Image 1 (cartoon, rainbow, N blue to C red):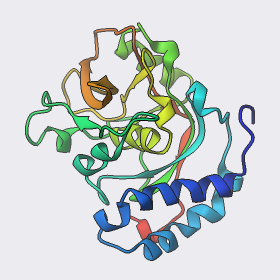
Image 2: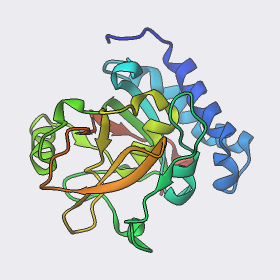
Image 3: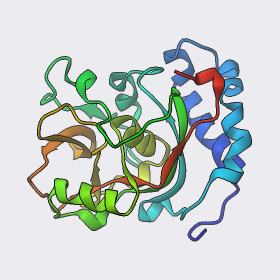
Image 4: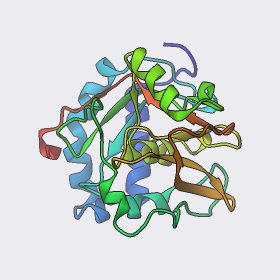
Amino acid sequence: MTGVAFDTVTEFDRQVARLIALGYPELAGTTAERFVRELAPLREAVASLVTGEHDPERGRVAFALVVTRQLVPIEETMPRTTLRGKDKPGFVDRSFEEGALERFVAPDPVSLPNSRAYLLLDVDRGEEFCGVVPADAMRVVADRERTVLTIEEGIALLTLFPEVLVKNKCYMLGGSRCGDRRVPALWISRNAPKLGWCWEGNPHTWLGMASAGGRVAVSPRFAG
């Protein structure tokens, strides 16, 4: 592994602590103590499962703990994101019509674990795809046997590593689609993170395509 040296278990604990500080247990209808306890199997496995570069400043993260909408809705997680050093909450753009977020789900061949909390491994915000047509970027990601990120995964990455979302290095989330040409994306608007979307055929110089090496779920307590 290259990049910033770190202890994986300590990093896992940091991520859990951040989610607790942001109120995730309460939003999930549980206590902080039970939240920690239910994630314990992932903590035990993290050292042996993690591969890849870890350098959040450069948009590369060895792993991120993902809490899906089955535990906490996107409408609740997005306002708990911020830019690094800022306090303005993230928001969902009004271009998502009422009920639209529920229809953005993982298409084939994106395969998600049967779990409401899991690890996303070897994550890259994908700025190499800035200026590339999203549909083309998604094909390249698939050819590399990597996976594009879902909305929840993109929010998890930003929540745990606010430094990954910076001007001209924002990212699309091709792992959540609703059957039309829209591709969700996270970028900066009004000095805060925004969840919006772009057309799959329209390139943007400031939007890359985020991807990951894989997903792992080992927690039976959070099984779907």
